[in-house]
Amino acid sequence: MNRTVVALGAVLGGALLLFAVAVALSAPAAPRALFTAPLPVPLVIAHQGGDGLRPGNTLAAFENAVRLRVDMLEMDVQSTADGALVLMHDSTVDRTTDGSGAVASFSLAELQQLDAAYDWSADGGQSNPFRGTDVRVPALQEVLAAFPEMRMIIEIKQEAPALGMPLCTLLAAHNMQQKVLVAAFSAVAIADFRKACPQVATAASQREVVTFYLLNLVFVGAAYSPPFSALQVPERRSGLQLITPSFASTAHLKQLHLHVWTVNETDDMRRMIDAGVDGIITDYPDRLLALLNR
Image (cartoon, rainbow, N blue to C red; front, side, top):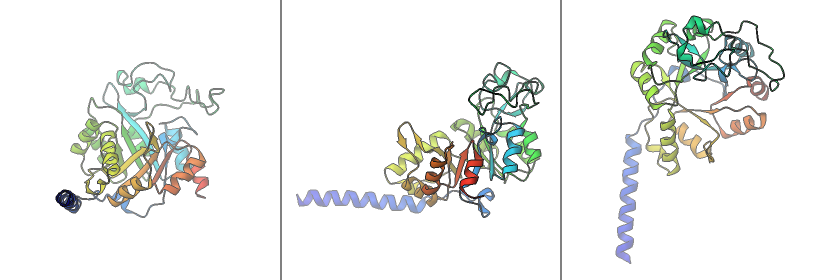
């Protein structure tokens, strides 16, 4: 029995030593200018510009969000048939416009003939107050030019054709490299962007979020060296509680920003504030600003 105890103790001691070495050799997230200035906590991040208040991913939404004095604008980018970068969440235009078909099948000029507010409603479809008011699908460069003072989250929605280099070039042309966080669910898309544009901060891909979550679950998250600056997750996913004190603590230990999406009810916002998240992504930034007395 004593030999067994000694052997188990040796194994445990070796494992603890290896973990201590791994923690010592690990690195926190690289500092980024986007998050180094004094920032309000939590950041009020307007999802698609505040899709509950105006048609999402449009200049109308972003203009309203800026008037409300949000902290960050969030948007989705993909490319047209002629290579323009435009803002659209879905791979097709069917849900939000009066058109039909894949975004990638339209030229920029063709896409901008569509009514981007055609199906938007704030009352469950009883009315469409912005239909026919010249709300169009914007090119990303229009948004960058219109709001050069704003911090932004740009989510890449496609893997092919790769957007890393054209997006990096556009950010440089507008001098926005230090004001943007680039995100993507796809590990392929975010790896391509990081290779093309290492000077711009990125969020974790879905695969990286899973890795971070699992490592934290078995108490070895401190040994992880994140190649990203932010974790963007829902509060819960597939029955799992992602936002926990342990998850938040490990994220902050690794100097990561923790953003939660998409939080629209005031009680949920209050719970996320209490959980210590760094940013709340919401369709209703007005509700969050009111809760924060801002």
